[in-house]
Amino acid sequence: MDNKIAKRMDKFDSVVTEYLRSTGFTTEELAMKLGIDKSTLWRYRKSEYYFAKAPFGVITQALHLANCSNDVLRYICGI
Image (tube, rainbow, N blue to C red; front, side, top):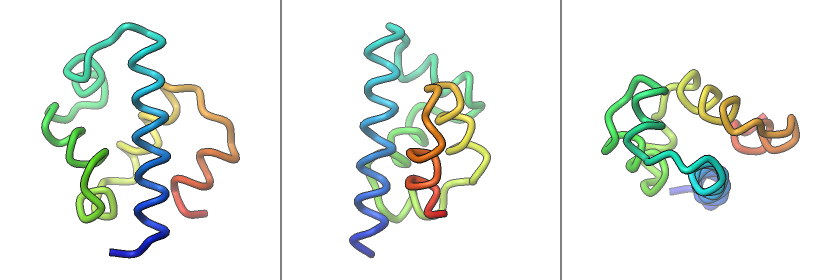
């Protein structure tokens, strides 16, 4: 896949990881808040293919929960 997608996916993964660490939530709890399965969230964080195909709303909702800056949001979303 594209190197840009890999970098954006890595940034998304680091934001989600930091959010989980700082809040004490589990991956399963976050996935439930996003309305997706835990394995689906894992795929979005670890597979370039699935990250590229992830619904825009799920990605932005996760970033909103993590209270990301606009710059990070734009970078991850590729805007």
